[in-house]
Amino acid sequence: MSHRILMLHGSSDLYGASKIFLLTAQVLIADGHYVIVCLSEDGPLVEALRKSGADVRIIRLGIIRRKYMNLAGVLNRCSVLWKARQALRKVVKEEGISIIFSNTAAVWIGAWVAKRDRIPHVWHLHEIIVQPKWFSSLMKRLVLSFSDKILVVSKAVAAHWQSNPPTEKIVLLYNGIDYSPFLHGMSLRRELNIPEDACVIGMVARVSPWKGQQYFLEIAKELNKKFINLIFIMTGDAFPGSEYVYKEIEKRVHDNKLSDTVIDLGFRRDVTNVLATLDILVLPSILPDPFPTVILEGMAAAKPIVATAHGGAPEMLVDQLSGYLVPWDNAAETSEKVSRLIENPTLRQDMGIFNKNRVLTNFSLTSFQKNMADVFRNGF
Image (cartoon, rainbow, N blue to C red):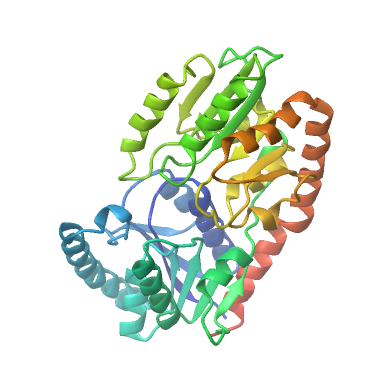
């Protein structure tokens, strides 16, 4: 049975959650559903969605972010959410929408409209929200009460959102992506003037307090005490409201005398080539990263990966075979693990091959497509 599905997402970038959102829309369109997507703003995701056959509309959705956790912010969100509710209810009525799909816990309005108009609501969750505790508790009640199905990207995310007694609404659905571009990336060493004999260590993530850019620089500082000829690459622009982190990053680079070894690329569309440039990929998130897409991409690119040992990373990687799972608060210990890879190119190669085989076998695009399609085929 085909549906008319209204899909909602909180950003228009092409980072992890947005890539999975795009892929989900493509799966549903290919399976015969009519898909209307509402986003708050224009951006690279809009063009990609339209090329895939989605009907894309720009409506401010009242996305919930930390910067709104104050009186003025709450009043702002209430006003925007009220207007979004009216606009979306009009879309629902005019387009005969039969299912609403909300991507990420930052998108509340879909749950509200679905409840009001008695439409099945699917909430796809990529987050583990720990702090503040009152907000975490509020979100759990909201998700459990306003969803017909809750799709989660890892066991860690499932455990976070599970109720007591357990709800059957939660469906574990590991992400899978098209790995073919990452199998044949082109190195940027010449473009970036990086010597061929340099060991390149990098991270790819949006800039925010919890994604670990500053922790990455602490690790870089420790490694520079032991090695010469290292280059550290940082890729990603800021989450809205997190632009101030750039100043903190710049200060840390200056204070730790890292200017000659750190390259900040900002936003790049060619992440495939960024990964091809690296010898070692680091995921330094200081809070649990639920199921980071960049790990899948790095595995497909046959890179050894050093990741902080929380969130979805322990489900994706095999410690000492994929790379290393490390603490999120000990740069010295982490640098020791990275050092092993710097000193042993053969180990890096072996771990990269292991990762490539593992991601193609265990986190396949085909499995994701089938499992996502089945969610909508099996009824509500």
